[in-house]
Length: 418
Image (cartoon, rainbow, N blue to C red; front, side):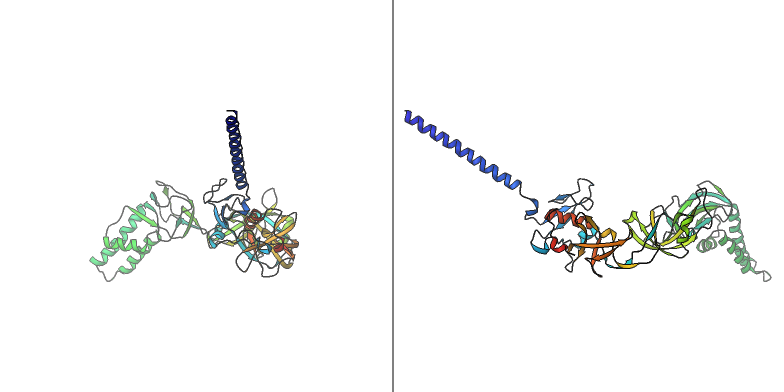
């Protein structure tokens, strides 16, 4: 009996030992799989946010921070040698991530003076639609500012006794020509004078033809627009009485705009009419366009004793809007040298680097040595050659991807030698 108990006890201890061993192996395997670095995953595709590149997901969706749609990024995986930091993006990924490039070339790196200005409408291209006769506005067809109107578009309907009488005169001249046909009277001249009067009072040629064919005057007349542009001001309301010459609405053309800025009197000597300047628009991602100084106010404004300058710019695509902030830069001295845009430079404790576009459309980081410059361009001492293509917007996204792949302290320096 005792021998049987001993056998059962030994079997029980062995079973417990095997159970503990099995659980230990299972836990060790699970921990090993859980602690596997993400950089060594076989999956070569992940999703990130262009605004928050620290976000990395293995499935599509929205950014948990800004809720923008995540961008799909394909990586080449870890490799040895100089290819470890190469980043490959498709055309659609480049557009979504906002990657912009520029060619390294000689630029002016001399000292620049920057003024802060505001985009305004070009008053030289402003047009105003005024009332042609006295009457009451019965209906407005254009009600909001910012609306675009074109020539021939209905603007308002007016009841006018003067216009009604002019229509009667036009019809009467035509009837007299048909009925009397007096050779001593020049009916064509009478009809032409009455027609010109209607044209001057706002009727269109087609409206006059309809009046002649119908033979009936109308109690109210629709006035068509004689101007093009974007409505910037509406001076009347329905039911208002207007007199001849009273403004109805005002339009602006936004294909050409002004940027107005103020500067101290002591600074005016550095600016001259027709000087070419560079304009930066932070609301459009720092987009830079060319402009020209076309006005400098000879009078000082107010108690502040500052001078006003006005820069004219083109807005062919209509992206620039009045009220936007703008920075006006003008070089005080000309000093040309091989340079790179300041927005392309990433600087840390190891130095300065830029991201270069390779011949196979991939991107690689490269260390550069820089000299002096201004807020737009920095002189290239070494590391880049004329004709190299560098990333000027989105470099932080590429840098974050490289750090994600290789780690902050394991960046492949083979590709980053100057």
